[in-house]
Image 1: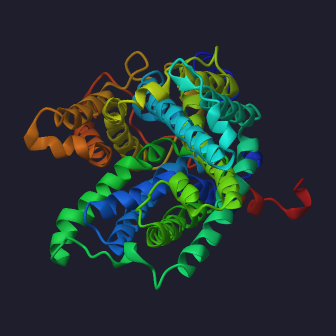
Image 2: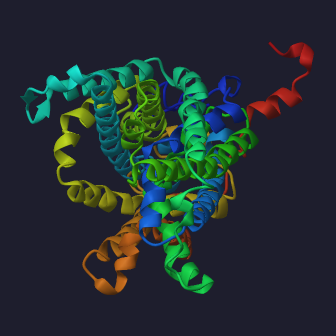
Image 3: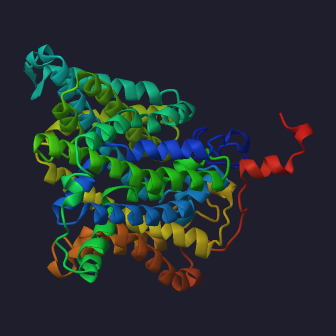
Length: 500
């Protein structure tokens, strides 16, 4: 734990190490957490988009499964820092970027998260509004427009934001309990819908009968599989790879978080996306329409009970994604920036307000603008991830001096609180990815920035190490400190009679 020399500019109770005894998240908590994140409208859209580009359903499922396996490996690397040291991502970043320099990748991650929180909340509220209107026709009549938004949608949005606020204000323990049942809840709707779809089809239906446009296995691998894997990673959980310690700092052990990650991400994704494909296939067989929006599917089925229950599950699933992926991160990132001003709960409230104030419904009128902004900022996420992995596993050999992370003029101080070498690698890696927007020859670098950036950050940082070690500026790169400690390790080493 940080000692008496702690700099008040660098800490408050929410940024301190999670006590080993308070790390209670087990494998089920992490499995259900990831179930909640993959069980969303995004899954329908991803499969639909891949099939629309000419993949068969089986090829699309293979792309998704492999992409999630790769992400799982990266998350196992970054998540280990949280489970062993109990520190959030923004504090860990101080070891590589300097105690103040860490605010740069942390704030950029926070900005992306706030943006997606607003978009996801708006889309969730919109889906609920449509489904309620389909069930209760009178709801649609309440359509007086205020500031470009109908009155019924205003009610849906305000209620949606308020529930998120209610959950976050009780802290991470409430989130753990919520995710524990919210993640698997979507199966309440998915299982009967799959049964309904199979009952209305001969086999798996038209979606699975569509053939691939790729003429050979080699063509699929180079033109479909590899680009598909990279794009899926960029569009899904590349940002979570960076800040996973925000969640794993509450893990009982690294094994628990990795086990939960395996069952909740690649396995649950494959099952959920497969079920989504079957449901869409059944809907197409019955209605003749290809509907990859779950709200449209529920309305097309025409069963009021399923529609109502489905609306509730969509709302809960979206909240499950938003809380873990898009609200926890900025809460810690903003707290790290101004620990004297913000607490975790106060920063979460500010994040929710910001996500509402910038009016995502206006940005969604021109989604290209929104995604362009988020992709530009997201180009920083990949290099930052690569730098952190290289610094922790290669340079520091898996050791951190945790108390020094909370002190000024420590081994992580660098030059005025900034590690100029890691920031140089970040600027170069990000600059190359962003340059692809304007240079056609390297447009692929921008398109796959979140994936390519990890490799660039990793290689560039290590390439600068010989210069950094000989330089008089920059942080110390000696592998000092401890290897960390997990709750399960403490329990095994403590005689049962001494346990509380």
